[in-house]
Image (cartoon, rainbow, N blue to C red; front, side, top):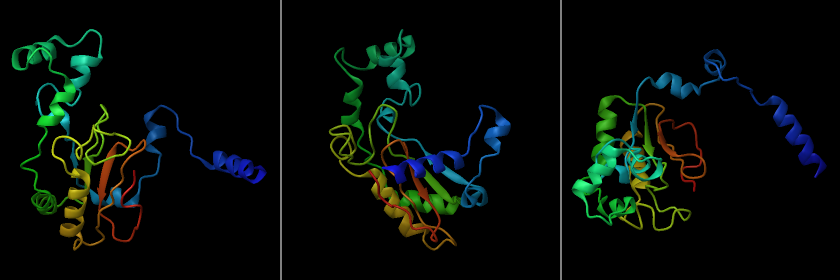
Length: 193
């Protein structure tokens, strides 16, 4: 136990401390691959895409905040049955036109050096079959497929020829995004829950 306490003390002394101002935040180190990449693609996609109304915060504006946003309440009232719940959108999230190979080709053709896919949105829906999100994920409901894994594999296969590029997928925990990162020289955990 004592060695652990010494290690904890050493780590806490060496950890960078930042203050809530721009000069402090701008002093943080950036990974070299990110600074050199110049162009990346962020894909924010999930259940909230089904109504295609308001924003990715639709669920919160409709059912979470007090008072609810009248525009969202009106939209649901005018377009869905009275008993309709936000979770009902998941069954309508089919991703039937999702072609990960085509997406990877588009990303590559754009010159993007990395791709970030929303692996887990704020309302908890995961775009992979997370054991921590039982029955509220893309494998159990909706498209019935691992969207993160499918896109990660396609980007890995299509973009492996780019110099210094590969894909890094990270899922789960406090990390809400899947980083499809390009960097063949780094072998990091490719799949993590």
